[in-house]
Image (cartoon, rainbow, N blue to C red; front, top):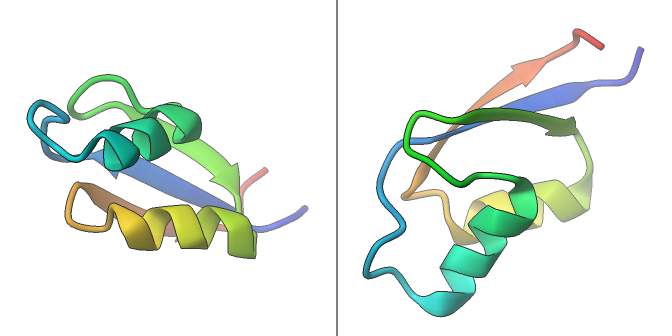
Length: 63
């Protein structure tokens, strides 16, 4: 099983930079408290780093 990352949107996307909104949408985050599971890759971590003030991240080894 490959490593996974759980990402939860903690703050609203209203009024945020358009680029940050697009990153959240690309990760699959649409609503507050919505949680998605993505593969643990450098690309995903780069996206998380850009919007880290909006999200909460947990590493997971579950498939």
